[in-house]
Length: 500
Image: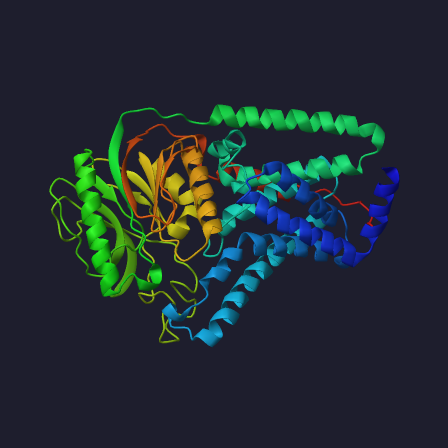
């Protein structure tokens, strides 16, 4: 065993060997978040990253760290390749595949850049000590929070626990996804220190790590909110209308038939409202009416000479919406271009360029008898939006999306993000998507019901309403951000010599 460790340490001196190992670890990290949902595996993959952080040279430190970040993003965002073919967006087929691959590679490059920046920040703090590690972990968590406020962030380390380790994910209800991301990074540091510790000290590191893991799980478990209040009845429809065909005459007729059938079934089961996915109705398209049931549906509308993707509310019997909540966070390139106004094309969306609506994510007012925090597709990755809506009175959460033609991997990521948002806010969450996922998630992040993907289906669910606030929905990200800032500013001299 000692000979093997010596051989590995000698091999890691070679820059390209270490770069390859760090890149493989990053690829496994991207998979460990979703679909695997395996925190222990993620912690193991962080060992090479911490080793890179502990090295000062560009070849032995920056390059492996950047390789880790790029590989993690490339594996976790590989679903971008399913954008091809882009002919339905007006892109010629000869350019479709190169453009899709280029977009995917740019995402990987963004991951390399961000993790490389994190490596550079570590130059200012003494490592491998606990204080420096805590500072870097909090900076990572703060980085995910800040990125989530922008237009590009989708998935971070904070989502790893939601699918299968809800006790650990419960920490999100205390200080949000930034805390969860920081905990993962700190756990990786502990394993790194365990591997580097002399053999006589490893038992102490192992015991300390075990106590930390047990304490964090216990705290997260106690923080989970269990809502069992009076429920409302809500119908949902998964229409399965292919995005590349959804505005054809055949698709419109099929949607109207499926919608009418779902509305009648919901009425028979006592549901006064039916929830439909993002972009279900075309611009100026009126839905069918069935006595006794209203619609909350994705669609499009014109506002101030611009086109918006919205969640529209149709009271029972209405042919026109009486309320709307516009999508605020649009998909770069897909729904808007940063150089809008310089080119004739305002975006690659099948419905043309879109304009963002207000940042508020709370849907309330007559005729709705309840208040909901809403995430329209891409917005599910913005934890602060739903936390603010919950703080302002949301009693349940709604997530509507259209994830066709993307593969199952993206569906799993969306569902994991929805589970984490339910935990953070202590609210039941209803997910409705065109081809899936369509699911009911309780306030502890457990999926209590789910429709089969890619199958036309409708059902009715009982959704309990909540009013109590979690610490995160009450205070937001401020405790984490302030703690990270104070630690970052209270910098001590770095006396650590450069690693070979």
